[in-house]
Image (cartoon, rainbow, N blue to C red; front, side, top):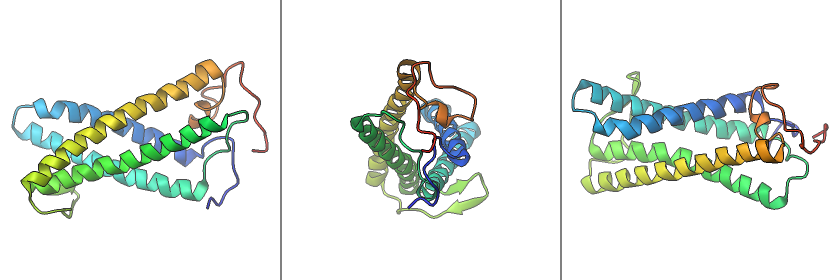
Length: 196
């Protein structure tokens, strides 16, 4: 149960975690889509190691964001938002969190089934989730790729919905996930309840 009263925008920590995770996902997408084509050698090994370390970082940051959201809660719904939009937003957020946890976990399992050690930026090793297993490795690899494309599609829809709210509905959906004052709701925005 949230320990703070509903507010009109996201808390600062939520915003930082949101945009940090978004940037890391973009970096991971670029690495994941290009590293397989690299010639074998030290650079490819280092790129794979970086991909794994960033993936573990995303896993930890998403877990932190979930814990923070349970503690701090989410902003009050914008005035005039239809119930069906609230439900879609809630389901979208739930799916995003699920994918952001499942994707790095599938990568961890893929790495374990391949029999490779897993380190976080060379600082410490993480335990294997399974023993070396070729069939499991292949399944985990397919799952990892499928989860990536599902996440990519959902992120595009999520971003498009935020832009639609800002550009066409003129509400504060996008503005309240940005630093205060960076963006204002459009001219035809519905007034918000100041006590929300």
